[in-house]
Image (cartoon, rainbow, N blue to C red; front, side, top):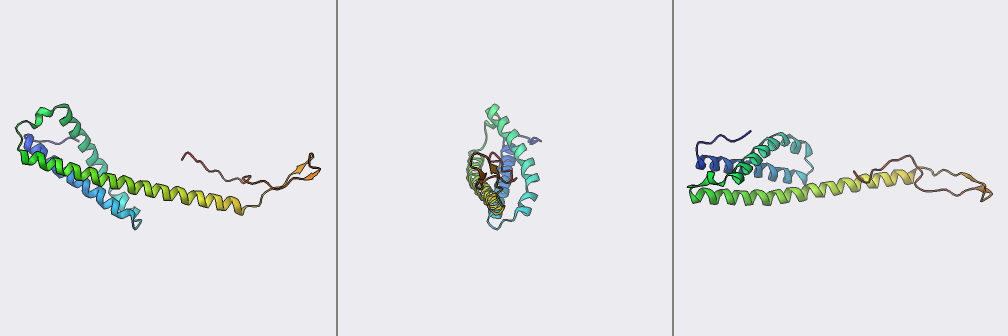
Amino acid sequence: MAILANNAADLVEQMILLTKRLAEIADAQVNMFSPNDIEEYTKMNDEASRLAATYTIECNRIANNPDILNGLDVHLKDTLKKETKRFRDILAAHEDAIERGKTLSEGLVKAIATEAANARPTPQAYSPSLRGIEGPKRDTSAIALDRRA
């Protein structure tokens, strides 16, 4: 969905509000990573997705037609720049929080898989070359671990 604006000032004012709201959502989600409040985090995803789509459309429209902002009050341009910088800083923190969560989750899954594999008895097989029972082998359990995931 695109922003319906009457003029350049109206467009920039709406972009400022949009940028502020996206920053608020991202900041709130970063703060939810600490106490692991994932349920509340995911409730914000729908709104964030809709706003991000609008933000992308409008940023592309302005980038493709910078003349839209001709004659705009310097104060509005400065405010939009300030809010955009703030938003980008919060997005960097958001990305770091997601990366930490991903790393923790992957480590937990790997530790559980390793522990489960170590807890299973290892099969022993007959070996004609050893003239008897071959020693136990590791990693012969039926646990599948996709290292690419």
